[in-house]
Image (tube, rainbow, N blue to C red):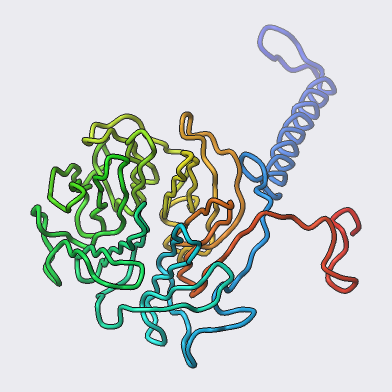
Length: 351
């Protein structure tokens, strides 16, 4: 029997061969798609290459806890160091004072701040060694000496606002090379506020939204040596970059939901970030990555995994991370080329 197929007659056997060939092609396409999907499930490389660091997981608490008896970190919101190498920890637990200071090796030195803060959030140390904090519970920014003497308070305690003399849950502070400083304001507001070196209000910019110059949780702020301002627009999954007076310059949208930005005196840009804002919120900062970024292009120069809410990089290239898990992580350069002992792993080349 001969069947018509278009303008030609096709034998049943030819039709079967055509159908079989189509089925084989379709099967190969599906197999290739599945193979590609399986490959996608493997380990991704570290963006820009692996940052080869080792870690001290509980800086200040291990191997020898030198804090007063019974003291323990709660959620650590921020960490910073000064020129002498002292390490300042800003934490939310009730079993220690909110600001705890250690030497570079983790020995307890001093502490202060009990009863002073609504909810500890950000901490920075300026060029003169003053310690600045942002309190997003009481809507204030404070400046201390390295020994804890209060020098300046901005904002009205427990009074949220959007005026020149109020904040609404401020998050971070950054210092310009001219001496002026900026506050990211923050959880309740969607703006950046600029002050003179004496703390006089100069200007502000930003409002809620997704357009350039608009914010959804400006969570961190940093300034480079040229005065360029970098703002983590966390819930919009981007970092926005401005000139000194708030003019939008560009945005980086490839770094995810950045928790915190740190820029060294040499203009090395470091971030602690998450894939996106929903992952960050779902994992409660646990699935983070430390990244080093080229400031000119935004290119990722290296990365490694770390939980974290706050990042600080020292002149010795140590990375301190304040983590809401209740830890201060001290990352230091170094990489194991073998296991730690006969019973603690072989070299990576030996399964």
